[in-house]
Image 1: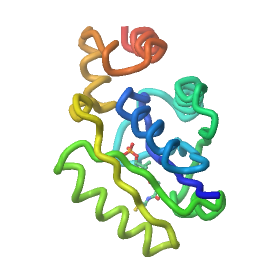
Image 2: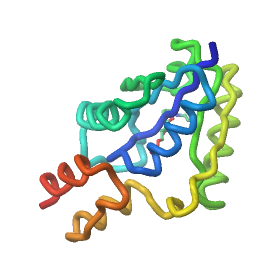
Image 3: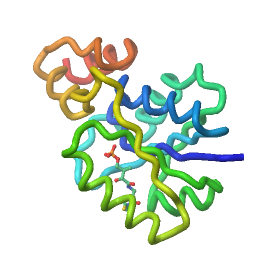
Image 4: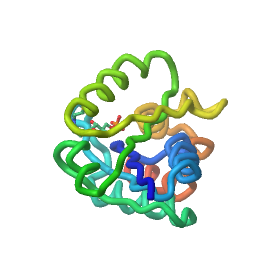
Length: 157
Ligand code: PNS
């Protein structure tokens, strides 16, 4: 059985993330979405909230489960017997850092990173921009699930 991990901070989950998770679920037998913390980013939703949102958003995908993780993503992959990390690439600007992480991760443990190009029309969608737009009163309903839109409104006013 081929298991992949899709790691991210998902603060909050966007339709871009869900597109990558869905496509990963078609490529692998089993997918674990690993909700972690990016130490270089500030957070709006805490870990439990982000895990709950991701679980709800993935509830229609039979071979996808969602777990929180702390520590190294490679340790999480080894503990779960996952042989691949799946990451979405939006633009060339994502590539340098993602390549560095992929090479570091494969140096730490035997795990491959598989990059999936973001679907056309989703390349500009990021959690950071969604939070900025929602915080300034903009409509983000085209970029996140409806229930996430509501949670953003409740949190940011
Ligand atoms: O959605 P993000 O913010 O790009 O997610 C980044 C995340 C959480 C996947 C990344 O920061 C990560 O893997 N953190 C776990 C700690 C770790 O393994 N660091 C070394 C990476 S080479």
